[in-house]
Image 1 (tube, one colour):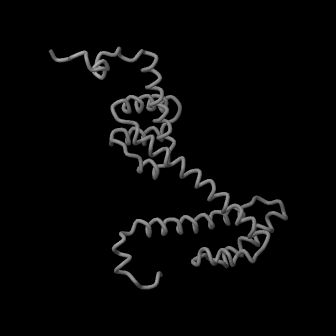
Image 2 (image 1 turned 135 degrees about the horizontal axis):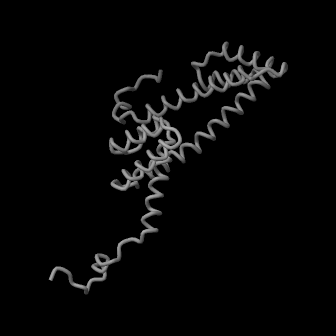
Image 3 (image 1 turned 180 degrees about the vertical axis):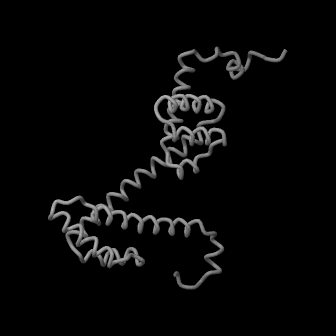
Length: 195
């Protein structure tokens, strides 16, 4: 007398177990998800909601090569069968969105670097955007990058300009993020000018 068959929802209790091939596909999907996690940087991995054992297994896999890595990925897939993969997938989707924004940011910085090489007046734009920028250092890098280009030498200064611009942008983004996370009541108590 435990089950009445009048409710169609109860029929779900009597469905056949998933086929071997569908279980295999599910396991492969979890292992693929594990591979995506192994490919993450340590900073991003920390942002993913993972049980400690899974986190440690992923960190270990990041240091393995070839066969050891393959076996570790199978182990990660096995661990993932015991958890809900949805929050993990949601975080990876966020990263994918962020990486699209990241690519756009990199292209913006590359264009700025090219503009700087074409016109030294772009230093003014950089100064307005990032007041803390070392403009003298950027001018020196610009001169060196132009000399490298003329002499067909390796683009050491050209790359350094990009690194400097990226650091300035990253610091600016981090400051904006910290400002956005500040509780609203601090805005009321702190009426002074922004530093």
